Image 1 (tube, rainbow over the protein chains, first blue to last red):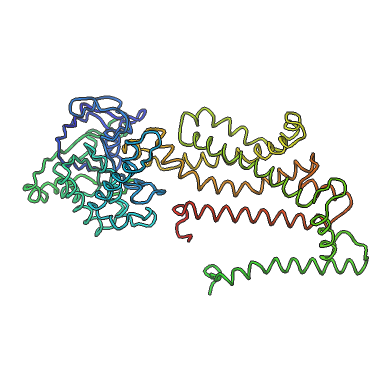
Image 2: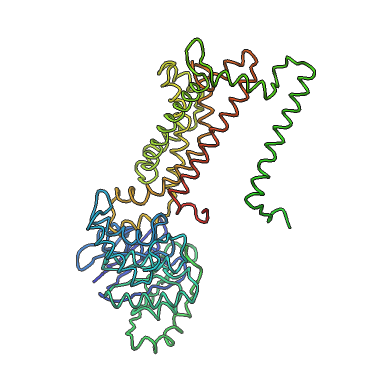
Length: 262
Length: 271
């Protein structure tokens, strides 16, 4: 569905990503891992449309992807994904309001009631139905990420991009969130691309794990070469569990820097 | 108990806060009494009774020349100028600050201009304002606007410009256009900051008001103070200064209460 052809991302002299060619199938859950600075987030931002690739093309169903953020690609960041001035319900409604009322970005009357019903159904799915009148500052990190997911999913995006979505959460909450995202992925038939620095998370959630790292390294000019895909592992659900142990061994031999990208 | 962790309760804090004010008032009365013991006609530190008598004339008796109750006429004239000046400054800070903060091309175009205007000392512009607008109300209001608007614009623009980039990206992925981002993301988050900027601008606004009134006016709190200075009328000046302080405190409190009430989300834990 999503296809990247010979993608390069460069900041001035610094090559971040080079020769990235990928085909991502509809309904897949792609985890991207790799050391810090390997361009995981750059790749995600490029697919999101926040950054333009310096070379190469991205196509969605054969059509070139507009190099701007739009409602076909939803996103959840590690932080700052929800609006602090809106309640849980307001944060979920805002996506519907933007598209249905382009001038005032607000809905009234029956249109608003319909939107509220839709938003509440969405909040029910992520387990925030009872918190609809809270502001983000009154909620825990896990609840904020649940809200960010609900906010993105109400737009029914073709692709959901997750940038270390659970990186700032403590382990117990993270487990709950893994269950939630897996369930939503199945129920909504989503295509998910997730950047993470947690290898276990990458393998337990993903149907495909990509490892980004530099294939070439010039010690005199460390910026000369960018990162590419060094491992591309397809996991089927059945295989996944068996293969984790075996493949994780390979991947672990690559230095994985677990510093949090903030 | 250590000083850095000691937390006085509400009543205790109120008492502690009132204490220095009471000490100051008492010290004044003692000093005034001492001076009056030496010289019963002293004008520099008038006794409270003399101040009350002088103020009663301004408060309750119409001025024989103009037929106005001078204290109230002064207060209304000053508050009108202050309100108009701050109103114009606040409106322009919201509109210009929002555009500068939320739209990078606008910031690139007009940011340097706003910075250049902001570094000019407003009082240096006062002669120009008098020449351009004459000696009437316009020049006084214009001085307040010129004095506080650049600060408020830069404060709001800076705050909006510093909002996490993620918020804008998120809004765009939710189907917003630029207008939608300004209306639903930038504007609501600019408002509490605008209230804060307005609060901080009250002090300078009063300075510019009193300065303008001292130089050219025929009514106003600042005008009265500078007029009666010629007669060493401390019995009028001191109550006027106290009245200005009271007005400023009330405005400050009203703004901070209003912000808490309207934008509870921006004041976590402050209820």
